[in-house]
Image 1 (tube, rainbow, N blue to C red):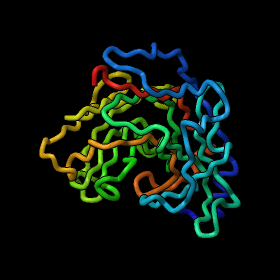
Image 2: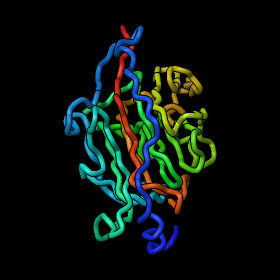
Image 3: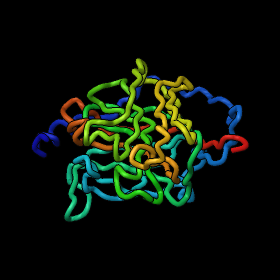
Image 4: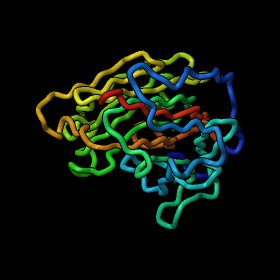
Length: 278
């Protein structure tokens, strides 16, 4: 991490830049064989707190992240029928006395307001970009039946790290399969237009597998090994959705003089489907 005085010098001259955006109207909500059971089209402002809650804190979240997640409307807001999750450089620092940080952002979750299993999720989004910027659309267990991370599982619908622009990751974590022990189950897909375009990031979660899609193109499947062992398949319990933009950490590294702030991930919609007759 660069000294704070260098960060202030680098970032004081950086302003947000927007490219050409693909904001075409999305397809109909209906999907063959699926029923829409939960959605947020972000058509009304402010953010609907009946569907989302803010996770607040700056303790690094197990990844040595550098941001402080706030409940401030400057970090998460609805504008032009889009959810904006905004990472900002805070030269004076932000957080509490024990967790002072120089970046702020937002981490939204549906826990207690949207908790599901065996579903399809579609999230249409345009990613935040830049060195040290780490947007994610993912799921964590609601009840933690099998114990703390990674025992009860994690589903990463979309992750992107700025030093590898365009490469989107879909992954799962379990006690047997996780990056801490080098056994994580993951696949990637490269998007050439990630700077300028929205894409739909999806999973279909069944009792025997989880399929991962970008724009309805399947690129990864994680299969239940049918051993009835939570260590490899904890995905028979309720999970909730999270959307956030992290700054820094072990994987993306720290921001540098190329990183532009503020940096937004824009979300057009979130739609949750349940398989018919399931």
